[in-house]
Image 1 (cartoon, rainbow, N blue to C red):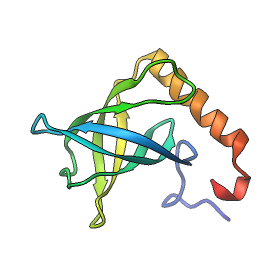
Image 2: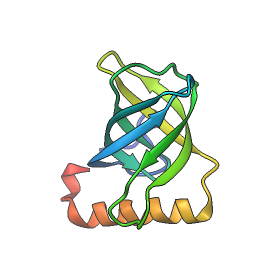
Image 3: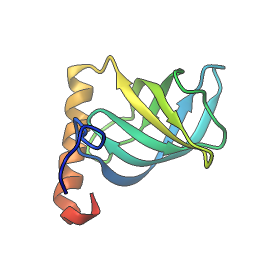
Image 4: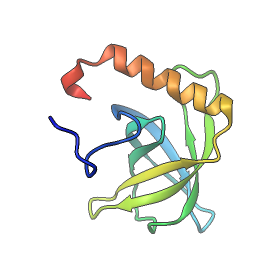
Length: 115
């Protein structure tokens, strides 16, 4: 497939299925599911919508990391089926490394067509 500016991404995405907790703009925790991840952000399904542009706190337990990660993200899109796209913001080097290691592990485990 030829890469055009519209479908070019900075980081490859990988499918996953992990519990996700989001503290929304109303300081409420929403429990959902992370369905995809990349070094730049993640996709998740939540029980209610969060407005695009909101800055949230994500809590995510990666199998390759000893403790849960708590990172800030901005909501980049929200679809009618309550799927949300989050872009990580202000990651520390340690957080970046943990997410990169998990993505690398997923890349090894999944056939190339499943990415």
